[in-house]
Length: 111
Ligand code: SF4
Ligand code: SF4
Image (cartoon, rainbow, N blue to C red; front, top):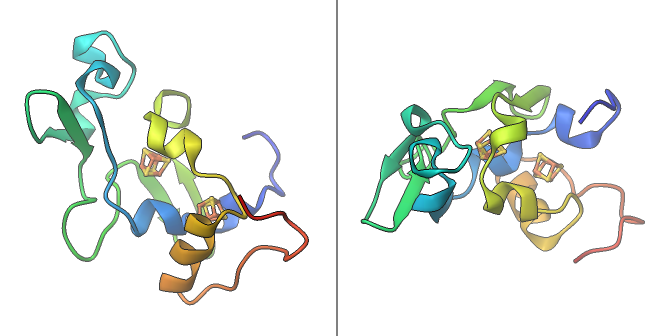
């Protein structure tokens, strides 16, 4: 995310709104990329980003302040649920609403 104008860099709401679960195979110690120290094991097959399973939700990898300036500290190594959450999607709108932020530009097609 090199574009400094990218809306996510002024948001970060989805990193502080949802539980982030993913396969054990995404953990670095198991052949993936997500640093094990930033996640917790849930079951033998599922891991969760640390900080996303209790209120207030805030992923341990999130850097900055939601709604002002935010970025993922492990952007290149983040798990699949984070890659799949599209800016402008319903989940994006929901996350932003939880933080009192309006939906992104309404011209952005919802997915
Ligand atoms: S809630 Fe939407 S705009 Fe905000 S960081 Fe997530 S995807 Fe980007
Ligand atoms: S890993 Fe990065 S993109 Fe995913 S929830 Fe945490 S801070 Fe957000």
